[in-house]
Image (cartoon, helix red, strand yellow):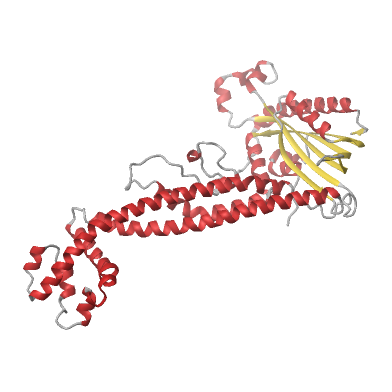
Length: 469
């Protein structure tokens, strides 16, 4: 399996500007080493500082790895196991309901085919009416007449008893008593055809009512099962997500991770960005005055952002807090500050690449399995739940219950949501044109470097870092 790239490496790959440049515009590094003080104050101080600078920080990477010989590894392993077991139990219920939904759909398909014949009886097309009636006669002879009467049924008498060879054809040929009287047959056959035709006509009326009632009940049951499926899926989601978050990353040959030691390695990456306001910059003189005009601003196809990427790498010794269930982490923290200028296409491409990195393996597997398995069925579920032939068309909840498993329908208006991952195309980042490269990119880069140095300087002075570069 290919090693997951860092955010800095992804930016270098996706951005034509940094791919040529080879590195970020500005890099600062701080090292903080203390076995007594914890990482949390350092992290949250910097997070709050970024918010004060209007950078709107977003966490991109959150990985950890505990050495197998540590108590921290054992305790997190127990918690992860509980989450996995609970999620697996709910998924078993999901599979049970899923099989029920499949069976209901197959039944509804059969009902729909049967009901089509009853609908055709009301058609204005005589040929269609005749075909539907013949179809229902065949069904009645096989399912009702033969089952109830056995050797006295029309088919058994016509095929097995002398003198009744014309009975089957006569029954299929007539539709009412008048037509029976006009048949050139003996009275015995006519009497049998008359009684069976009356039974058949009564059966048509009653069977249509029962079948439509059964169809309606099955649709209601399908809706309840789909709702149960979504409910179970939502219940399973937090357990699966927690299990994924409690998974320890495999650091393989990292020399800092020794199996028998009591060691923790933590990796965090947060990205903050602020949009370059072209009009304001032009009015302040940072850009040519022409850039402040509306027609010029409307001609700009993509925005530029001053970005700050901060990577934490923490190596610590987990120590359990007395009489409490959590750990304190003291150790060595390496904080790397990088400044970037990225346009909206590059930021969208970065998000796409991070999704491809499959940072949440469990959720990725669940999503792939559920979307693929429900892809065909979802259309049929929507068809039967919104069947306008049975009731007035009303807007309904047609959300995919399996997508709820991965948090796709967090919003209440689920019917308006559209799957993104199936439709999302590969984003292509084009190189800057002259105007973007010489003005927007340069100004955005300058702002990013300025913000980066302020962050670095305030952070360093506030904590009296042991070393920095």
